[in-house]
Length: 85
Image 1 (tube, rainbow, N blue to C red):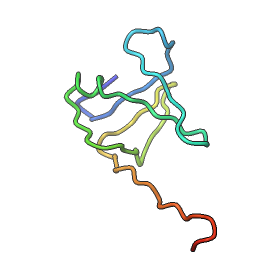
Image 2 (image 1 turned 90 degrees about the horizontal axis):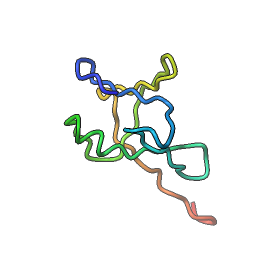
Image 3 (image 1 turned 135 degrees about the vertical axis):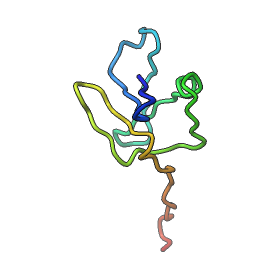
Image 4 (image 1 turned 60 degrees about the vertical axis):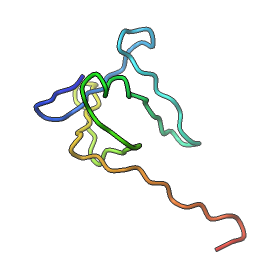
């Protein structure tokens, strides 16, 4: 779901076989998940050039609401190798 008036994306649980569904994929060793929604963004003329995180996210009536105005570029912390500091 996309609301162009409020620049928000709504994501709700769906069957993997449902039309317009996008699978969640595990990311890392934690419970993090990622969604590749490039086709959705292209269809709605949403331009996202990098991996992003949303500073605010809310669940409303079983819908994850992501505000495109509250995006930040996702950055990785540099790893410290064992024995080095």
